[in-house]
Length: 255
Image (cartoon, rainbow, N blue to C red; front, side, top):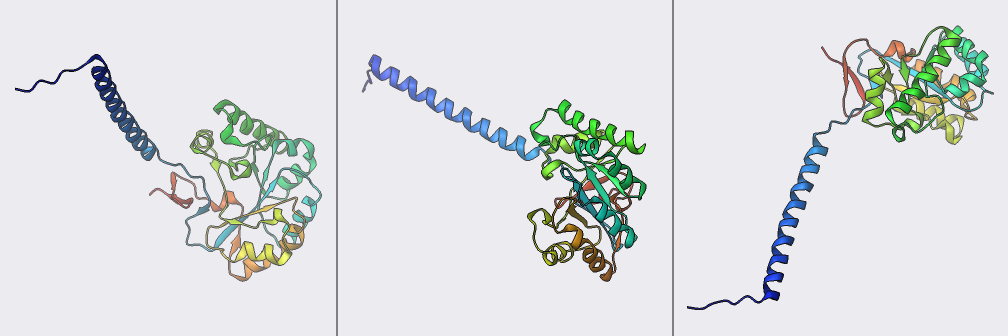
């Protein structure tokens, strides 16, 4: 019979190998657990467009900085009898109260674009709520009505942002057509960006401070109407009732 004699050094090496093996198995199980947990966390998506058979779409403007073009935009919209949605930052509301009142007076939606144009996912839940509440209060003070639509600054969101907005009985709204007007492309390019991929239920993003947007707006409206679409505010585009959004952000009513 053959015997194996373990020295103290051999025993220590053997124990170390066993411990390393156990640690490796534990790490493996933890990694699998984290992967399963991540996979089971459902991603919550804002409203990018709306599921509808009607040929309708919405134009929206984000207002965060200057105000030189607001009157021109409003006058063009009046000329074409078009109502849209303006997402306003609270600081902009504070700086340009007369423009806020005029936007409301002319029959356009006013949406909430946060108080300070902050990156919402970087904030705590309390800070996010403060950003939304403060902007709502500023707008309500001037117009008598608090917004029900919220657009996260920079289009930056996560599950916490979307769920918080919903908990405040508001809609978190993005866009599925980006004019890219903030890059100051030509008028023709802005019009093309807004109309090439237009579909029923589309939401178009423009800004009230981009250089060529006032000149492009009449052409955008004419091009949309020539395709047989009606332009309505986002509040008229989104249906009322319980809804879900699919992976593309299309809003679908739950029947």
